[in-house]
Length: 272
Ligand SMILES: [Zn+2]
Image (cartoon, rainbow, N blue to C red; front, top):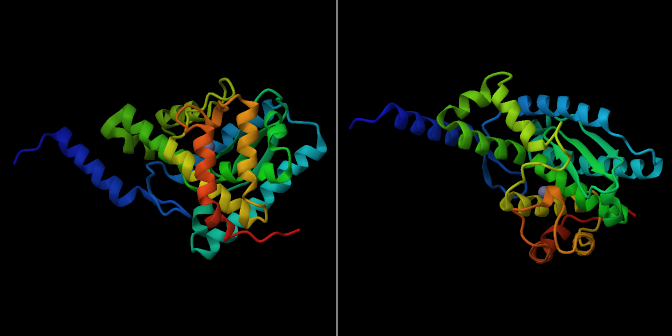
């Protein structure tokens, strides 16, 4: 049977993707698409993150900044232990964790770029209210990174935009197309909060993994329910940028979190 070159390329891409570019997500074991080498993503993150932090302005509130860093360190330590215990420490080799608090009282947002580069905006802290509330957001954002959601989102976007040549572009060093999509995703250099949203599936996954990670770090995962109730009240039922558009309603999210709580509680060992 005669197969056109285009078709052949597509089949080749599909097979390559299945064989080489599948990533099994920690905790949930879902297979996800990962065309980008994580080392390249970590490099891009580090460069973009530095720009964000330079621009800041960083919060001058020492106590709040310290709280964000403390929660970040505790969850980082828990995640590292989990990955080591599960023979996956290799996945963290490109990580260079950083936690910063940006002074912006009107942005109810936070994110974690691939490689563990975390930013919180002061606007989300009143919704977090407590250290455990910060852990809800921190766990969720770090979960996006650990689950390779950035890579998956970029891979999908590259296939959508470049079709069969996506894999080439993803793996060619310093591909400007890849960089363009990365910047589009993380909204760096443009307006804060215009991130390409994660999919609903990714959001639910980050919620579940976030509960497990915060529990392992000694924070009561049931705080997530209270956090999302406060978020619902603060945004009038809407959701801030990172949690935007493709996301289920806050009510759906809260009921999904409640359903997953018994599983997360298995990892919970209070530290204080
Ligand atoms: Zn999210």
